[in-house]
Length: 510
Image (cartoon, rainbow, N blue to C red; front, side):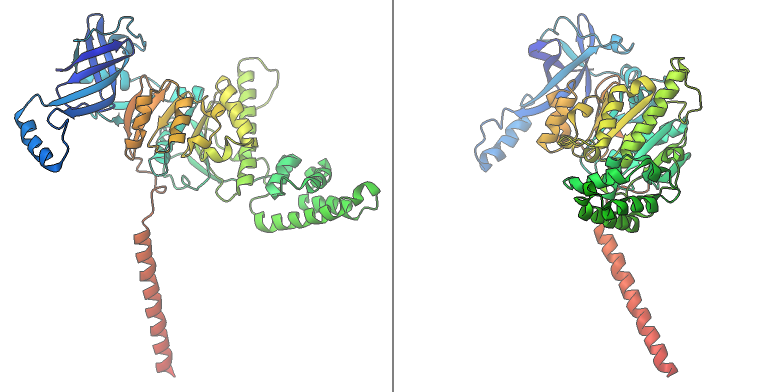
């Protein structure tokens, strides 16, 4: 069906068209050129009216309504269309842009369901349904799971726009095929995810396995407390790490420094007493989190499962240390296993993860910040650079893209971008996803909950998708304050009534 014509100046990658009806941003159209049928994506759409062009007051507006209704030529529907390539090539997985721009006057026609299904709903191994095309809702939108493991994934959106729903959906689908997922859950959003093969672990830290800098962060010694840091470094010996009574031995080493008559230790005395207090306080506050007897934390991650590592009980510094440790150890294991598998290592032994693993970092702006270095940021960047060679994929999730390190963000091969309002966030996204046009970026403010722009290697073409809701996800949505207040008031009234009844009963008994 002919819906319009190319007008004005056209380019190999972009044309303007006048249409017979309003066209939606995100709608796919076919440019029926002499060289072949070209698929295009509507990136900008506008409607104008000749009758309302020079309207200056209310009365003129009211009169113009009648004029516009009588004149069938009054409305002008303009579409700015990005050219994606020849349709037949795209259906075979090849993106070939025409060398000669479509000639003005070329027809714009509506694609059939069959035209789009081959591209957006491939029935190939590794592809899973994630929702439907936003403007062509009869077409399933599928993504390639292989590409998010080999080339990484960024999920970016404002709070409440559907990030955790998408993470849950991907986790559910990977778990179905017995893949291994690890989610670092900073806000306890996924521990109640009701899917098979889920392994929920309350993340703890074994202080024996840390270096002195990591232990200092875990104990929350201030970065500026240089002498306290030095005391801890001297006290945190191999004997302490190997001792059955870890905390006792550590305190003894610190006490030795505090009470030593050796001249070189005298300047550390006051700081050593402070370190003693910090260690005592840490045992009191973090006794359930800092566990020197827990063994290797990595052993709690199960291969072929969806693993939820609940780090919500950790402070930001502790969570950073834990995250860095897990990322380092998982990468090391995957690297050793991969090298052994390809005969490039003589190292013998068994490996925890003998198949690819996908790691998802929630609140990426906390752990991979733009402004300063962290241990988690170092290992995330290393995985972003090297992980694909060893079957380790990285997913980063954030509602503040502007605060995420651009070097890591730009190495994400695929993106799901949902509603974003802040201009700084949009600029960061544009920098990280060079293939995404400014017109598409400008649509981020108008997306609804669950709508997403999908770009990168996990899709055949850029697309606007409405992501299906995961019914198994119990938590994560907005809480109703009004409902909770009403429940609290009702419980309060019940408590008052119960108290009054007990008082009356006691009076009768007296």
